[in-house]
Image 1 (cartoon, rainbow, N blue to C red):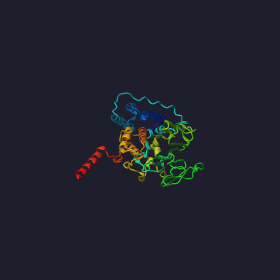
Image 2: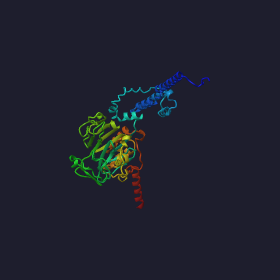
Image 3: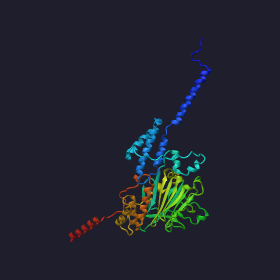
Image 4: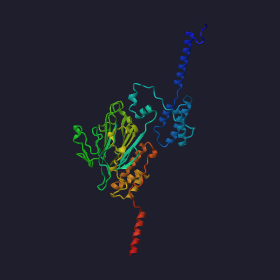
Length: 451
């Protein structure tokens, strides 16, 4: 019988296997060398648009979009069928139309490529830079939120709600895994329900201890100075009406900083932490927490790069104000037990007051409007708060507090379109001069008719 047509010799089988292995390796090499590079295009675009500010930001944004488009065209052949790639292409077209960018024109300068990765030192170099670390992990920049407390006080929450509060005693603005900020309010006028930011009491042993709770026993060195909170405020040796103060605690982060405490009080806004340092300490990432004096005695800025957070503390007249820009992931890092935070939930409903309930303390509402209009041309909640504060307190310096809060919001709020908040029917009730004349004339006519 003859040999089967399908039979193969060992030499032929070995040759066939070799060819198959070679083809497989060739395909793998081709895929490795020519894989879709859309993620690199995305990263370059994000880096180019991360900190666009100033008058030429629209031009720079169009340059970044053209660079993005050019990058996608270069990798088009290897990205066929890639959903991320096709989404990016359509997104670029939409953005160029929205921002009126031409397809031809200058592009952003190429992003400098990082040096060869040093795997041994990556964690120590980057883990204390939140933005860079987030971008490395997720391929996009983090999202941010803004909160502020100023004036009588007025609170703008992370969710763009705006409340005027009558809270007295110590209340936490923030209480999460990274930060603790607590402030105290006291009446600005005897006949008013409004209050102004005053002395907070915060420390590593008082996180979450508010609203009729007593502090756990603090260290002996500070126990004699620690007040106790009741339903009506604070009792103890340090009363809120005596000394105004704002305390911010940056909690210990093993890889980056030692715990740092910043305290500001009226006529004393130090450009250093409580221990005299100006950074996060001796750890490798200590420089990721810094403090700078923007205006001596009036404006201090603290940058915490390790958690993507910037804080501004201001003094305007006899009031302190607080503003923060925090990474959303950081702002949400709290437990159910840390639910009382004015920056998160705003003032409790029972502690909110209407800004239409203005009680005069020496300055008429119309005069207050004119004073506030000089600093705040847009009649939004900042303007309404300014009028309310000036009328209630009789202190024209409250115009500076509202103006400073708006300036911080311009720098810190991630969405310029949500900068101004408009609330109707909440401003101080006014009787305009023409209306007042009508009332007077009507009364005179009525008197004449009677006689």
